[in-house]
Image (cartoon, rainbow, N blue to C red; front, side, top):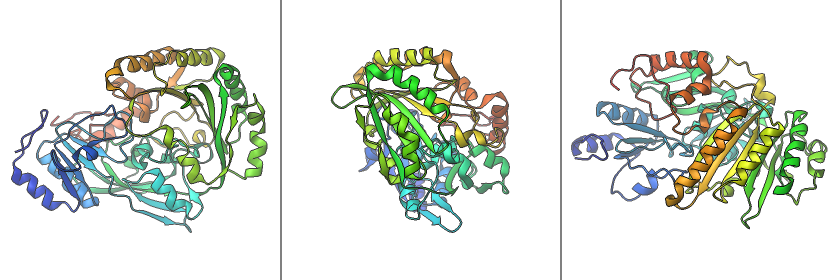
Length: 462
């Protein structure tokens, strides 16, 4: 028998049959590798599932879903495990772990790629860049393709080619009943609309088909200014960004260097001819001038892994976020004041530039709502000692509260466990009701509820 923290008691025979039905590995509490298998990127998440099914293919996913439903198990779905909210793992239930499923097939002639849901963007970019191709996919290579894409999917290339979900051509998905469906513009188009921004509410996507674009090399890197120049630098950036071409994406970040020096950095990607990029970036590189200019030509894969070391797995992380209406002087001053009050040298505030091709997609074409967003603010508290959590979480919450007067919406991938109202705010009332109807159609029992949950209209069995 097995049970933990409120999970059901399961006969060993049922677990043994489940194990025999899987091609992949079933991990139980006490097994070698259990602690590694339950760990996710955010070290603040410390949950202990009863079972972890490391799926080797689609049939394993079907078997796991049917086992979980048949035994009343709370179920989490893991792709890359990078989301700060930690929904990829649960206490006492089953984790359906897709991370072994990493196969990627590139069609260079059609400029498409089919990737399994356990792949990270590092895996994906390695294969597509072999053909000089890429698609929008985050800013850290260890992020999984699945969660990022299903929630919308920002990245260095979004101003050129739209969000990751805008480049989806189709998905394969296992439903709460264990059926396999394909969703595309022509097949189950209602579901295809929902998975482009609606998260993991409707099933387990096992593979993604993406449109690719010629990419690389890019002009990328980081420009660094001292903190006492941050206000002027952000004011300059505000004006510079208004006329920035679609090929250019810049993410300002307030941070502390490993030497303990607070600075403002501008992470840069110009996706186009390097010579043209040098011309476009010249005013930004001349301002100040920066105390460090690390911008230069690089492979796209190098750009994608440029920030990996700054965002390692295992730190305690608490994340709050909102889209911003703009970067007025009061907004800038509030950001700087709150950064000055940070309680950890590891904590950062990042401003992510939207616009360009993100806004070219019709607002009703996908579940992602905020097509007119200009910037997103990410408030990221990070620390090493779990005993200090309260003060660092408080800083992030107070910073978020201070920034609320300048907010214009929220990105669902950056939500923590913040309640139903915040989930609704990520979609707006009209889209949320449409998503509720989809949830009711494809998961009326709310089996897939460890996510930014959209509750069905008439949940059964919950």
